[in-house]
Image (cartoon, rainbow, N blue to C red; front, side, top):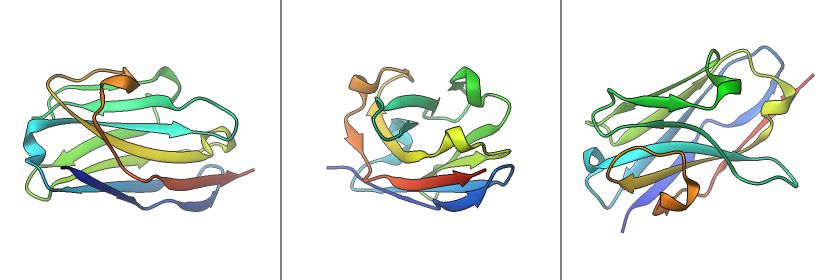
Length: 123
């Protein structure tokens, strides 16, 4: 069983940066494609970004492409989400997720989820 723990969330002002981390245990990290999703109050959980097992392939939702960067360190069993130029509309609970096989944006394809970390961006 894979266990995922997110950290790094918080309250920041618009324009600030945050780096989220997601550390995994209980599985072979390098065998999982990883992703970040977020869920704002009253909204569906939405895809943000995904990164392949090697880290060579990434994909982003359009609204974060120029501001967010996903990366991973397989030696540390950790995936990161660097978020720059944060906006109030980025306020949400951020979740990391893991799946075997290739990357996908499809939420239902991810087998393992963390508990989420809150990101709040004030205007």
